[in-house]
Length: 386
Image (cartoon, rainbow, N blue to C red; front, side, top):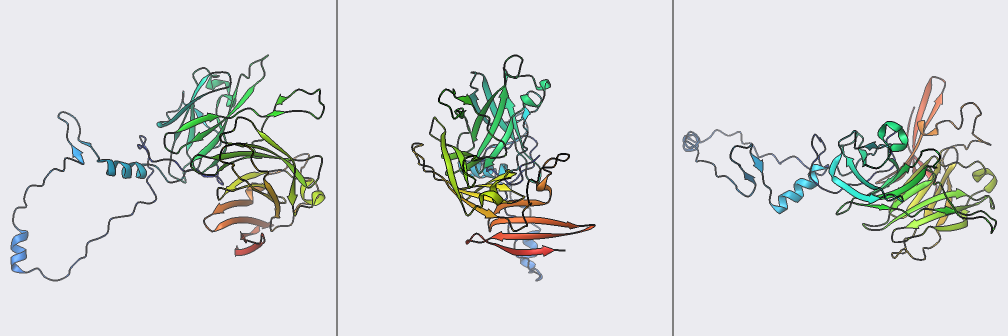
């Protein structure tokens, strides 16, 4: 399933074979002015003369004997061509592919190692939207692609120039499966960083720390600047109804920070949080992570990166209801589960702010309403289609 609400920017680089992507910033050349006057006799005679031979511009074009003509760009033109070779933004497929069976773009490759010491390399096959781009994994020592989906990488989140991905390894009896998370950074030279493992400890002092499985739906990625990022997961607190636990990791840190019982402002614990379930994550303005429950509302987290990765501040959480009637009680159905609210509702970050789309169906008819989030955390209707 493509990531429709998270986008990432890719650096300018060489164009991969077969790509139809072009930079959205390119503009067609300006047209010359056309004159409708009759040419003078002298101008007409000059136009019938044999034109002089064209000069070859050696700085932009070169011809190699016995080979096809190749272009050689100057440093200035090469950077412009590189910027135009890739789209300015892409949509990533949630499930990646093994490069053993798929030819990815090696110009975007970055190398790292799993917690077991196995070498992995990640690259991308980029395509201009509305086509989806694909993350590819080169894992010589990993499980074979024929072993199923556990051998393929999975995109958890993406924001601007960074991508959070998950790799599962060692799923062979009697050994339990292990999970590694990596952050791919596209600015400058591509890099791939394995995140430290997050551990969970029970309430008893006798409990030993155990590796914690991160939620794919409730884990978000925020690009704070060119080199700084934050990974955060929200978990509803069982101790306080209007509070949540935040598992927090910022770039430059070797350990996860856990903020317990972070208060959620403007949230009614019983009505708003009792049946909360995160459907989608959203990153906004290099500062906010938003957890969305399409049946209820959204939790906006104000995140601050300390810069050096040491002593991060506790995130500030605020509850904002969606402009729809919330589902009363538990929306989970014993036969159909929780359903698929993403099919009729969508929240996204645009150049004009946060937008919410809701589709209401009444028998054989339906209506579509577009809302905008105001600065005072209220919603206003932009348009309605009946």
